[in-house]
Image 1 (tube, rainbow, N blue to C red):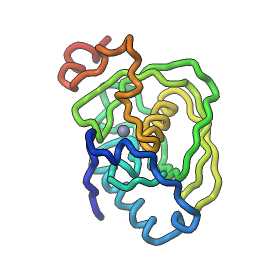
Image 2 (image 1 turned 120 degrees about the horizontal axis):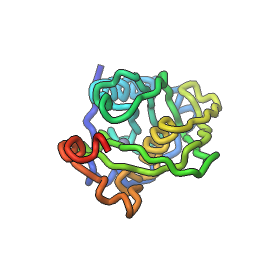
Image 3 (image 1 turned 60 degrees about the vertical axis):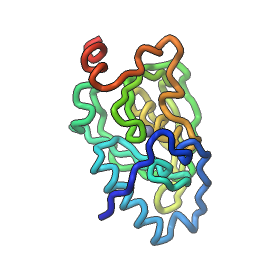
Length: 183
Ligand code: ZN
């Protein structure tokens, strides 16, 4: 078990476009160990997902796993269950552009919440941990989670996505609790 150091906002690696991963690299023992360490890190930090650049490895890999009882989000959103997914080289196709807003947080931007509008429904094409081609459809909150994580692979952070009309909904957690939680 290894908990990796999280890269935080300001670290240039979070702003790079991550490298595509080859099938051979995906199937290597080194990658299996790295994924295991990413999961240890995700569980330790109680996040919903983690992208490889967040642990200073600039490759197209993200892990997503949602436990509906995750304490980090217990007051902000009703969490859907999402069993562990490992995504290499993911590509998003928007199926429904209708914007939906959710409060987001990020392990690389600690202590902050922001209200972000994103398309409601997407398809994601990706390779799994066996380098098999897979496709999934995500809507509602899950669509937001996938877009947030996969944004990391393009060097984007959720704060970049805040609509100008929502500027006041970029907030520290204490202020979120005080002014916005029940709105
Ligand atoms: Zn994030």
